Each structure stands twice: as structure tokens, then as C-alpha cells.
Amino acid sequence: MSTSADILVSLIAVLHGGFLILEMFLWTTPVGRRVFGLRHEQAQATRVLAANQGLYNGFLAAGLIWGLVDNAHGLAIKTFFLACVVLAGLFGGFTANRRIIVVQALPAAVALFLMWMA
Image 1: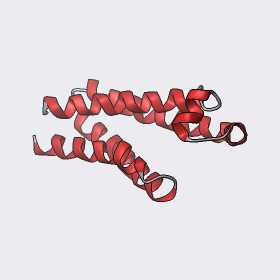
Image 2 (image 1 turned 45 degrees about the horizontal axis):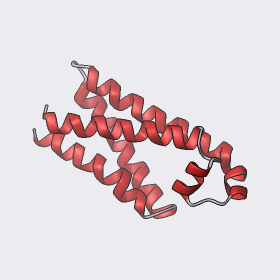
Image 3 (image 1 turned 30 degrees about the vertical axis):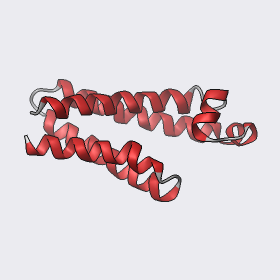
């Protein structure tokens, strides 16, 4: 397994842990509203949906960490969770904000490439 791939997988896990924090705990705060470009009313109206989305991002982070520490099945686990990140990033990019493709889908696709080229 490539060290650069594992470093990128680790960074993606941290990124998704950050999404969890932003979406579950900071959504209605000035920081969360600024990151997601929301008005106070929008943030209040969507906070439960955002918390649910944040929980899913936490599951992605947990799966990637699991893949990093499981020596027997790590490649398969990381492949599955990175593929989930790519698909979620593409869906979000085409339905919500194109920036999601660059922030979420592209790093996961690069990590998949690095893992399978090692």
C-alpha cells in the first residue's frame, strides 16, 4: 500500500470528520452559515437535515479510519468507503454545489487511483 495513498485517505477522513462537526454542531452558528452560505432562517429551517447529513459524513470518516487500521481487509474497506465518497461528492456537485466535486469527489478519486496503482 502506498504511503501517499494512506496519507490522502487520512486527510479525507479528517475532512469528513470536519464536515460532521460543521453540519451537526455548527450549522446554525456564524461559522457554519458562512461556510455554507446560509442566512439565519435557512440554517434554522434545515438544521435537522444538516445534522443527518453530518452523521453520514461521520460514518464515511469512521469507515476510512477502519480501512487504515485493518491490515487484513484495509484495501477493500478503503475502496468501498472512498467509492462512497466519490459518488456522494458527484451527486452533491451536480445537485447542490459544483465545488463539492473538487472538495470531496476529486481527492477520493485520487486516493483510489493511488491505492490501486501501488
